[in-house]
Amino acid sequence: MHQISLEGEVSAKGDGLQLDFAFEPNDYRLKANIDSAIAEGSIPFDDAEMALKGIYADVDYRHDEKQLKFSDIQGTFLVGKPFRAEEYQFSSHHILIKHLQDPDIDVDIAIKDDDEEIFRLVASSKS
Image (cartoon, rainbow, N blue to C red; front, side, top):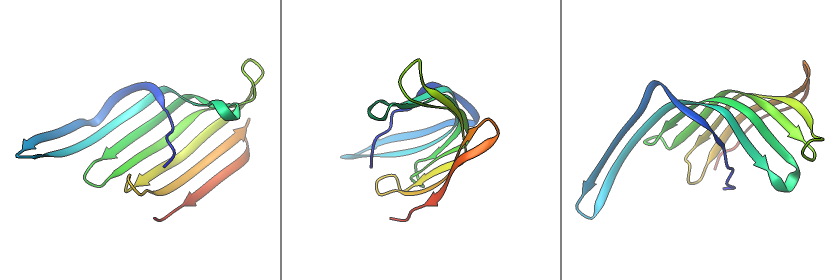
């Protein structure tokens, strides 16, 4: 799976962080659930002269289910060289990644110019 760097301010919400970490002889047990939000996030795509900036998203991670979900995503999609980039509205109902090692992905993403939708991707994959 391709790695994408997402930087931003993370804050807990709802149930926040639930972490159960126990050492056992020659092993360990981990249970983690995270209910959070990302604000002022950014994802650079340096090789493609694109970036996502000002990202806000709700984030839900369930370790036992091997599931990561981003929902109610909003931000700005920048295309072009710095200081000359075109700006578009980026939104997504959700990006759901199940089975993180061999992922199934379900996405609904839209890019708008003002209020006109110029690109929409609704897709899912099964491993």
